[in-house]
View 1 (tube, helix red, strand yellow):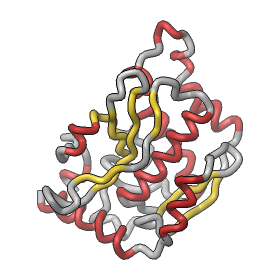
View 2 (view 1 turned 120 degrees about the horizontal axis):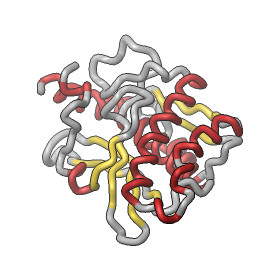
View 3 (view 1 turned 60 degrees about the vertical axis):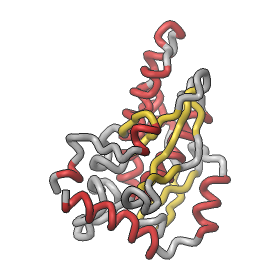
Length: 209
């Protein structure tokens, strides 16, 4: 638990000390990401921003994750969320090779000696961008993408951020959190209220590192 405590502290401190301009983050939120050009964050608190692109072949591999949902009889929110989680992990793998974040480890604390690390803010912003790409190109049909959200604000613990989606039909909200595991592992998707209560997966490496 001590390591987890310091991991959450580090996630906050990198956000507070990073030199990223607020205008850079605002720009990412307001731009329309396309396969030809979109921005991703790394370095803690979006201290570094890199413009990247995805080839048609790379996007076909992302699309293949959703291929079994083409039949409307198999299309349901739970199945779509499962594929969203896998697609986020796969996109992290692709982008990691482009910007040098392939070795990004779960959490934040004790990761300074490893290159290409992301904190919870980088993860939340990038995941939101990936979700917007998938929504824009028709892979995600049953969910809408919201802005990132932060829990705690020092009231019940240290602040931590995540991407968020909601079911279009029901309005039910879900956290899409890619910070709990190493780069390339499927994102964690749980009901937003569960996440907001302080949820951490029992097998997350941040509990043991």
